[in-house]
Length: 469
Image 1 (cartoon, rainbow, N blue to C red):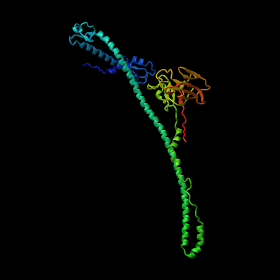
Image 2: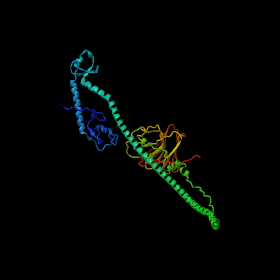
Image 3: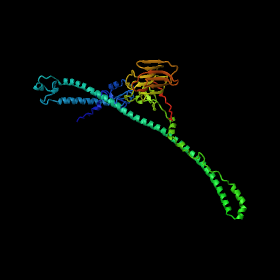
Image 4: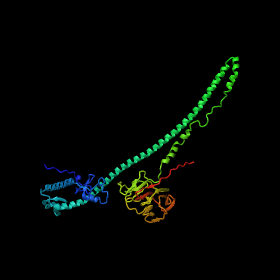
């Protein structure tokens, strides 16, 4: 008995073109594709990732001869089945071969059917010729579905990668939260230890002082008790004996005059209020020395494909090569830009950014509605360092070169949303660089743009405490 070829057809279809493999090649990740399909898919992808798992390809793909042989056998089997089917298919009415196709009824017929009343004045075509035309028409209808499934497969791969990315985000963020709380716990434990030691030292000192007072008082009590006891004994003696010892007894009593009233004195007790008063506030006030506040927190979910954001979300740098990231709607696709997490739609706000003079960069604000997936023609206001020149730039109308006496190291951005003022200053000299006057109508987000491999960073602000009287 001849072996039956397996019909798991999906195993013989290229996931790019959805057709039976043609000259299949094998990638290092073990996925196979048509050679021509793969080369076409790699045209705009310098890293040459796998279309399915996105793993970067190492070396040139190898021909998958085993898969090619299987596909050739599969196609031969399909051809044989078609011929067998055509040979065995005959007209159910006349037992003649179905050689014609009725264009009016859209069904195969035999030569006897053609001459029957049922097909009077109908149009006919040889079945092979008609099959070729209708197969082509069906292929045209099938092509959008094939394109759609190819698109869905790509989207599924991207979503699988996004799910893995989210998992990594969650694990990394949890790790950082735990590390931060570990530092806070350590600070609180050390602060608790220091305050308990101070409390115990004061307690030991106060107890030692009281012990000395008690010892002195006890000694005086013992002396007084001896004098009283001896005097009382003299008082109980006879008159002659009493009078003989009177002089000595009187001198003994006079030598023990009444001591001053024992006084506890100020400061004898523990100063509990010093240890407990505003305890949580005092600990928090001291804790602020180890706390850093940044007026702008960078959102890594918006960072362009070549940017990396630091773990503390306060600096960024240009890596020079594309970093694989999910293409979520918030992310910039074409620009090396990252946004602040929080936007502003009222009030006044300011923040400082450390900049450099060894590569291009821009800082400013951008309207929330600006598209992040294509070319941006308007909707942002910035100071831009480009080719050694500083510019105040807000397309399409403003492009002014700024005259500066020295390179900038820190820039302060001041936004007064309500008054429509956006000002830039040299932070070190508090010198105004430029002011944009604009009626703002929507939320504005801080942004930093850079192609510098050295980091640009947000400057932290000093935390102070004010107590209302």
